[in-house]
Image (spheres, helix red, strand yellow):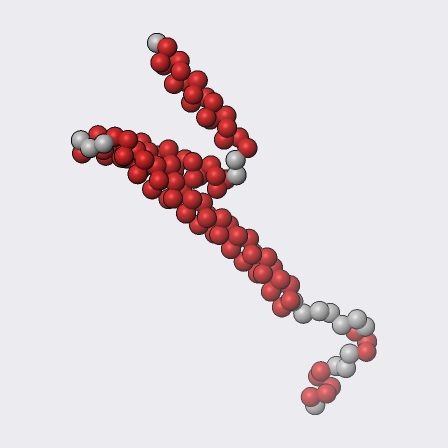
Length: 112
């Protein structure tokens, strides 16, 4: 019973520490946790060292979480820039009106 309370207390403590993390740090930590569980499961199935499997899984998961976060940040940055440049291009392509229409020569008279 005491071990369950300790595990819940440790989990709550670790979860509360994630509040001040950046998105990249959160994704890296999540990747490490998921990788550790996966490495532990694979090591248990393979009947090898559980600590080694957990450590390798955590390392691979942290790397994957970090790369995923960098990829997502670049996609968001690219989509933000393409929207802005599209707006500028559409605005630049718009023809401006002449200031005083009476001073603009009539194109029909010039071509005859």
